[in-house]
Image (cartoon, rainbow, N blue to C red):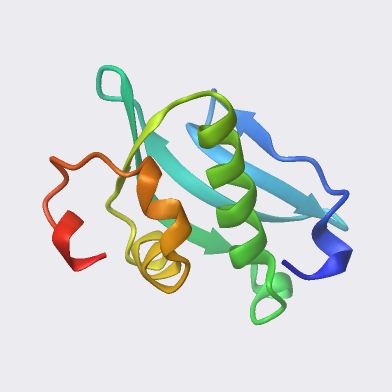
Amino acid sequence: MKTEYINIPLVKNEEKKRFEIEVDGHFAFIDYKEPGDKIALIHTETDPELAGKGAAAAVVEKTLHYLDENNIVLLPFCPYVFAYIKKNPEWKRLVSPKFNGYDKL
């Protein structure tokens, strides 16, 4: 994660059903759903002002830390999150072994 994002807090915005970080009034976020005792990360997006600046990777990393600290099992439906975990295999431990695609991580 780029150093400029380290001290920016992750917010679990339950009203909008997304994890988000705010940078100068702009957001990077991941939409989620909570089926049972797991969390499904559905879609990652950044406001255009943050595109290409590492904000998406920062919100993914911060969200993975949150899930890890709270012992929450992950279903990485979002292609960006899936690719991030594939590139950083230490996070595969959070993914449900029943997730379709687990063997591709």
